[in-house]
Length: 160
Image (cartoon, rainbow, N blue to C red; front, side):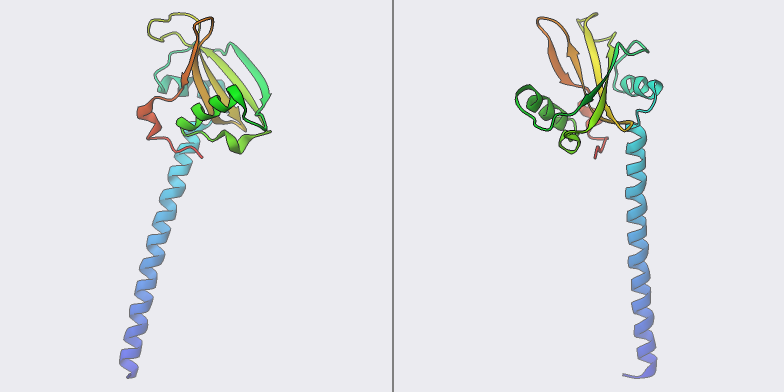
């Protein structure tokens, strides 16, 4: 191998290495950007952010929460809470990561649920100012609990 072909081989190697580094940087930047966007979507540090999030899901709510309750996510998911954790998982939320940790439940009155002008609430489960779960519920005798996030939005959100 001559010196000329050796230098040419080094140049090709360096060029390929530069391309690989550039591709990795672009991939990392794209992932960081999408994580930042998801964090902004799920930021819940203020009442205005929580109401805006609910509005983006299609829910019109009274602007002040009906209640704010400090809780601890159970360490064991048994019975009803196992069902609730499964509901959250169907929306992309992983309550497993929050077992035994403090959270806050914010409950808002929903004003536009079809066929139920009253007694429907949206509950947001927030930990460290980040949404970790939520639901829409009809309170009372014939109540129900269903996902908070519309299926069309679930594909857009990446919740980690």
